[in-house]
Length: 79
Image 1 (cartoon, rainbow, N blue to C red):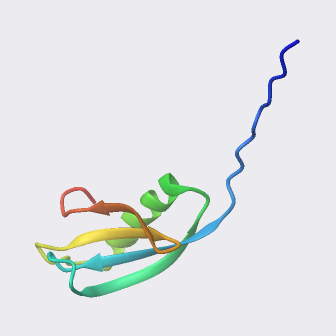
Image 2 (image 1 turned 120 degrees about the horizontal axis):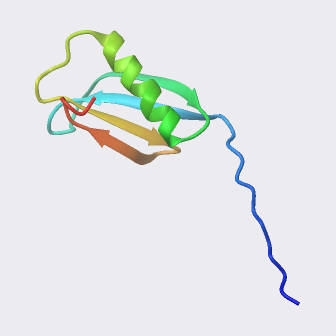
């Protein structure tokens, strides 16, 4: 007889930190926190947030963090 264990992964809301950084990453010039159930939802919400920010410096990039760990970094044109 073979036992099969099924794991159900549940998404719990988590707080992500979103930062708009200068090109070399030495300075954050805009940031926010948002609540999302998973990384994909955080990415979508971050893209909506950046659209509301207005003008973005040409060499800027967007960093998405969860618990101090980088989840995603996007350059202009990617967000």
